[in-house]
Image 1 (tube, rainbow, N blue to C red):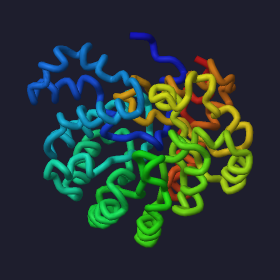
Image 2: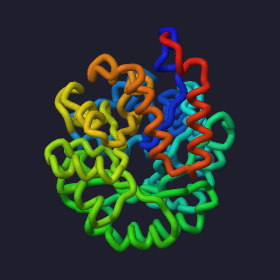
Image 3: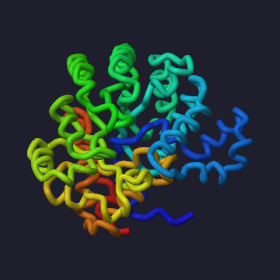
Length: 337
């Protein structure tokens, strides 16, 4: 194991990570053994190799396969505890994490109890603060999203502070969920939307105009529309970039093609995130390291990206100031190694 460097050791935030996609590989392996999945993956290394994808549909297929080993509330709590433990190992101090109730309600679990199970597991590790974002799936339609919204509203005491929208952009445009998002805002939830990951700028425009999204997840293809770049910068709409994720599913062909340098230079409030670290074999430190080695960010610019995560979070202003000061006072913050 390599010695932790500056990127590993600086304090961090994570605003775009899916709990179901952040299961530590060793934790998933324990669940595979628990439920007799060794016929398909004989050992831990075979399990690692399982997470390589031909295309986006194959990624979704693998996602569903993996969820088949998380079968009850105790499994969810066990996974949540180990995800939180992994955040601490990476010195991630604050997280706003997606969870998708319908990954498990289709197997007979209840949304409110799913949220309780995630919270029970996450709370076992006190060194990181994790808030929850309930993620709707476009492919399941607006009616299912409405039902999920009402269910998570009943469970918001579990630390659910916002809602998101993932799934297939091309077949299920954001405008179909306009009333769902209006209802979410009425209930007091913050909002984010996966947009511009596999579809062009029109998807991002719909997220900000039709859904009035507070943040944009991915936003990779905003680069194709100059007017959109200006709009995102002027309206200070944070973009939750996930460069390695975009590379792994083929949204970009090379990591050099990711537009994060352009976004940063144009004044867009960009953050860097892992999305699904189990699925993509990435860490937040690796994402930040690539800013320096590939996109020629200086250390000061990287620190600004980290602080953008605090600024883009849904913490209240007093807590944001407190967390920024905590980062700035960390002895690693001003070190060079």
